[in-house]
Amino acid sequence: MAIRTTGNVFSYEAVEQLNLKPKNFKELLTDEPFTRQDIITLQDPSHLEKFNIANFHHVKNDQKIEDEGIVLLIIMQANNVPIIVF
Image 1: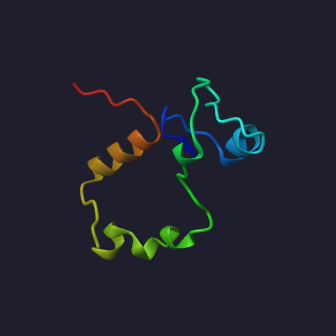
Image 2: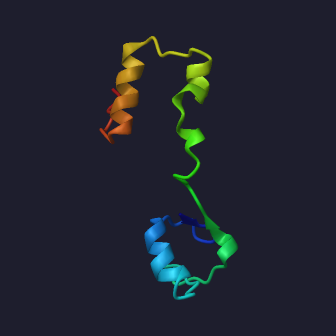
């Protein structure tokens, strides 16, 4: 879950137990006040249709990356491996 006013992200459990149940609408890191409408749900496991890989744009349109170098760069970037360009 994210707090709109600050952009900080927290687990659902943290927001539920530390903000919602005690009705403490102050952001956990900055102590900035917020409203219930400022809470943004980033991932909702009850909406499983968005996890259906067959509905992904690149799968529907049969898009593939042909260049192995690009694939390697994507993997390195995803794993926070520094990329040094000469």
